[in-house]
Length: 317
Image (cartoon, rainbow, N blue to C red; front, side, top):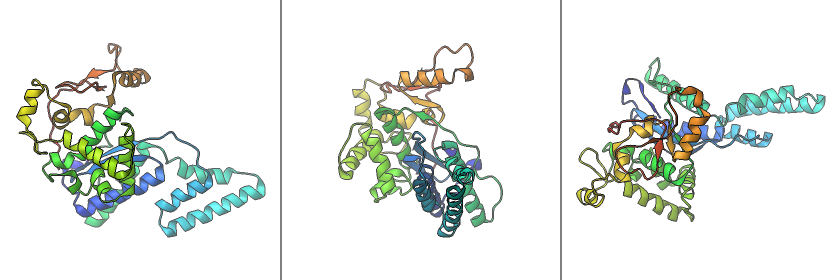
C-alpha cells in the first residue's frame, strides 16, 4: 500500500482509471499476479502474488513487450531484437542479444520494481495533467507478507475489497468500480482470474458464477456495520452475545487494520517463524521468536511478525 503526500485526496475517477490501467499493463509485463486491489482517493492497496522467476524464451518476452508498450515503441524494440538476434546467428556471439533481454527481464518478477514503476508512471502522468511538480507519494511503499494459505489470503483480500464500504462510500463493494471485486463483477478477466486464484486456495472450484457467489458470501459475512464503521447491516448485538463478547473475525478485519498495514508478515505460527528465522540478523538478540499473537479477539490461528496494539485506525477514502 502507499499513500499520497499529505494524504491529499487527489484520486478522482479519471485518476483511478489511469492508475488501474497502468497497474494492469505492468502486471502483464512483470509476470506478477494481482489477486485483488482497491484504489481510494488518497491511497491504494494491492494484494500481489510474486511467482517463482522462470526464464522466458524470446517469443514470450516479445509478447509481454507487445502488451506493455505502444505500437510505435514496440516496433522500435522489435527491430532492435531482430538485429541482435541476427547478429547472434551470424557470429555465434550472444552478448548483444543477452544485453537486450536483460534490460527487460531484470524488471520482471520483482515487487519493488513493479511498484516503483507504477507510482512513477502515475506521478508523471498526474503532474503533467495538473501542471504540478514534485513528489506525489509520501513514502516508498508499505508491504505485509501474507502466507499462501486460504485463511490468510482471503482475510487480507476481504480487508482490501471492503475499503470503500468501511469508508462509507458505497453500500456494496460491487458498486465501487476501482476495486478488484467490482472489476471482476463488471467482467474484467484479469480481476476474475485473481479472485478465482484466491478462492481456489480455499479449495473452491467451479466456473466464475460459482466462484463469484462464494467470494461474495465471504465478503458479506465479514463486512457488517459497527457503531464506528459503515458496512453491511447485521444484528450486531446478537452476534456479540453469541460470541460471548469475543469479536468474530468479520469484526476484527474492520477494527484492527494495523495488522494489515503494519504487521510486516501475516499467516500461521509456522509461517511467521520461518520468516523470522530467514531474517534473524534484522532483529535484536533479545528477540527469541517471531510469531506474535494478534490481539483483540479470535483471529482463528493468524499471527503477525509485529506485536501491535489492537486499536483501530481509520482508513480514509
